[in-house]
Length: 409
Image 1 (cartoon, rainbow, N blue to C red):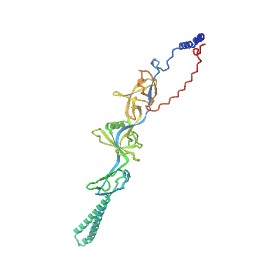
Image 2: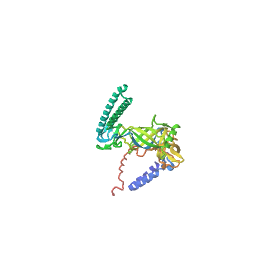
Image 3: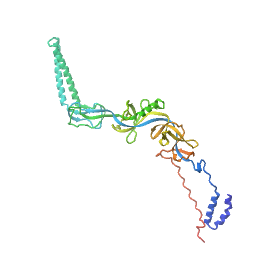
Image 4: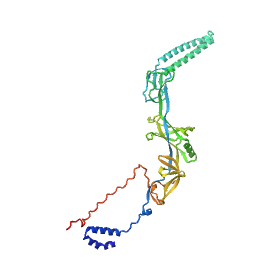
């Protein structure tokens, strides 16, 4: 302040000569009076502030280990509707693509030949029954031989069998659905001759609720999971069966969860894969047989496990590691044990403690042992925290016109 007070007379004298000179001198003196600024607290080498790095805080918990495997859907029951007797197809009794019930009529074959055969068989049966009944008292009286009576009884039984066969064939003329499900298109049309020499296929009925999904998993992964469960590192998912989720071709997840039915006992010698089957509810008929899907299978759960973004983990032949930010801002490497990959993140089974901060972003900002400033990491595409609204700068006070701007007298 003393320097400023001493120059007041000089400033007053110069102001009478011109505003330009006053302004230049004022700035020079003010800058000279100000001393060099001190570096901010916590600055790094050379007075630079610590670099900001993105970190995540370690939070252990029970994590389901999910494997995503390729699979294909299959109807739980498939029945081929075939003609069991020969004849002309007279009528189709269903709507293609509709749901049918077991025993529902589907086709009708011309029944006239089989009705006539049944009438003839029943007439022969009546005649044979009458003859056997007539011979019965005669054989007791030795009026006919026992051989003749035995022949009459045998002819009666043959006639009964022929009549039964005729009734069955007449019933086969009305073709019904063997199971409940959804029927596809008709493979033959009215007027076609079917069942001549072979059981002609007429349609296919498929039960699509529930659906089966068949998929494969590496035999090595299956053995590793079993070994981890035996050692107590993992526990089974669920009481009875592993949880199964279906991912459709568009990437969306099917709403209904399924359950694992079985895994094959034999490893495919060509691919080294084990075939597994799961059952998935399909009440709305959304899932269709033959559809390619991805199967998310939760076979086990890891206790006190941690998930980290993939970019936070460095994997090398020497082992897996992460960079941990300490309380003093110093960064140090840490060796960890990595499990499966899940949802774009690694499952960390060992090596970290709750509350520790792991670097995810900003590795290029590290400078030796210089401390860093950890900030919460935001995943790409997530909505960043709203920044505080910048206050509008106050309008500059209008300075009085300088002597140079005044008109010369």
